[in-house]
Length: 363
Image 1 (cartoon, rainbow, N blue to C red):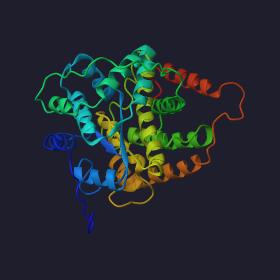
Image 2: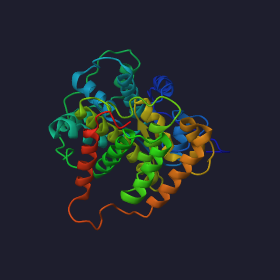
Image 3: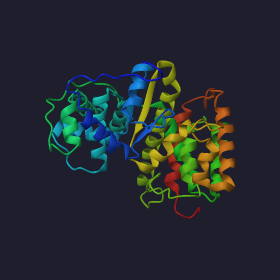
C-alpha cells in the first residue's frame, strides 16, 4: 500500500468479470441492507470490499431471511430452481457473490422460523441441503445466477445437525408479545400517533423496550405510505389467521432485532453484517436500526428518517418518544422479574385472547 492506494492481486482464474456482473445485478435490488456506514462506492464495490476485508481486516456475514435460505437449499436439493422469481434470483446471485468474495452466510434464525412452523425434522433436512449449497462451487453458482446454466450439481445433502430449532426462542417470544400489543392497539379506536405513544408507554412501564419493534410500529402506524402486508389478515373473520399474521410479523421484527444485535456486537469482533431479504417493507425498515439522535456522515438522524413515514408535523415527536423510550430500556429491566408463575406465557395468552375476541366493532 502506498499513498492511500493498494494493489490487490487475484488468483489465476478468478472469475472477476462474472463477479462484477453479479454485483451489478445485486446492486440494482433492495435486498441487501448493510449494517455499517458505506463508502461512496457502495456495498458491492470490489476495491472497497477488499480494503475493508484485507486492510481493515473485517469479516462480513449475511443474515438471510427464511425465504432466501429455503431457495438456496431447494436449488441444492433439486439441482435447479423451481422458478426464477425475484427471491430465487436474489438467492442465486447472493450465494454466487458470497462465495466469490468469501462472505459468510449465517442462516440460524431462518431455521428457527422453519422449525416453529414445520418442526425440527424439516429444519434438519433443509439445513443439510443448505450446507451443500454453501460449499464452494463459485463458478457453478455464477453460471446459474447469470443464466448460462439451468441446473447445478452440488452432490448429496450434508450430515444432519440435529439441533433443537423448534424450542422456545426468547427473542421471538418477546417480539410476539409486542406484536400482539400492536395488534390490540390497531384494532382499537385511537389515532395512529396515540397508538404509538401507548405502545411506547406500555413497553417502558409494563414490558421491555424492544427498539426494533418500536421501529416496526412506527412504520406500521406512519401516516405516509402503504403499510399493507406488515401484519397480514389482522381483520380476517377467521381469527386464527389474524394470530398467524401476528406470529409472522413477530418473525420480521426478530430479524430486525438480530440484525441490530449483530451490528452492536460486530465492531469489537471486526465483523460486519448484512441483512438479506426480498420483503420490501422489512428491507425499508432495516436501515433504521442504525439511526440515532444525530446525522452521521451519510446516515440520517432518526428524526430525518421518520419524515418518510410521518411527515414534518409528527416526525420529531415520534423520533423523540422513541429515543426517550430506548433510554429507559437501557436499564435492562425485565417484566415479571419479581412475579410468581410464568408472566411471559400469561401475556401471550392475554394478547391472543384480545386479538381472537375482536369482532370488527371496536374501531
